[in-house]
Length: 114
Length: 113
Image: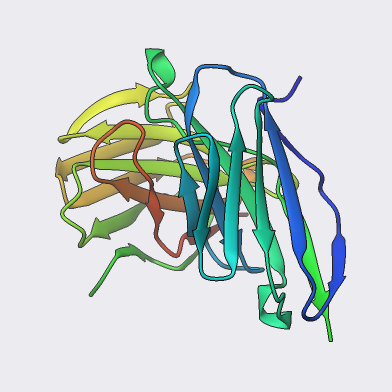
């Protein structure tokens, strides 16, 4: 079982729609959760982080965390063609030898078409 | 300069060469990281430095040698690499080692011939 799993996609949505990206993780010791956006040929850019159960909103982005289900999601409202990228989910454990280590999923490719 | 910078942005080297990658963070952070991103594989952690002390070596071959002279600078020394080491090498930093968000530099695209 992969530590962090994402559907690789591609996920295709029309401009203006809501894009929903999902991620599950296997380690119940995970405490910090991140979403990065990576354009082709570029480095990952942090767009959201969440530590507590529930929703966190920032502009058009909403991160949702459910620790009981080991599930974290990212919603992008009013999707724009410029949102087309690979979205990486990453988690950090609370302690142990992996403390501070970002573990990434494979990424979901999102395409927003006009 | 702002954020995290890396040089060079692109590097082509032969298997017998020795080269170094440089990373500098301008965020006042105390932890720095090297990650590797290969095609079709998730980003994977290589090394972690906290307050200039290496705290994790994620089973990386000895042909990769990190160095952290101070909390703002991080190097990755490369020698006798293999073609399978060709990848995007990313530096990141965070406020402290732990649960904090990490910010990435632009990366060095390395090709080993």
